[in-house]
Image 1: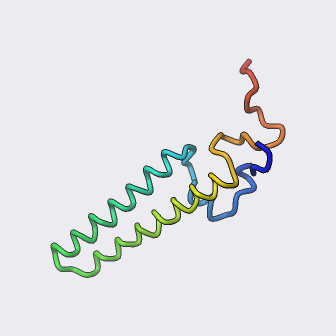
Image 2: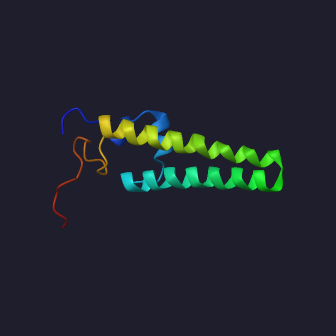
Image 3: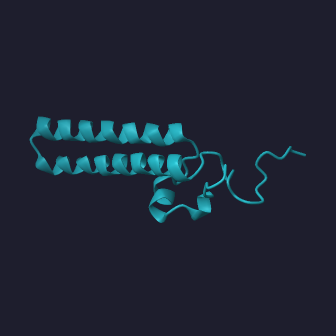
Length: 95
């Protein structure tokens, strides 16, 4: 796993996007949830005729950031919890 960065070395925007989400599947789930929320809110805005509800399209920005963070970690990091950190206990037997 050479060349992989530990989570502490990730860029700030990746750390913020992944905050509390340990697995790739969780991040992708939230990305799709954000897309669904944007579609739902904009559908509601069209239904009630109130353009203020179109502000919910900001969920698409969240989805974009989730997908960018997934791509960044796939290329530069690891989805294993601190597996790339030197001196980590990953792979060590429990006592």
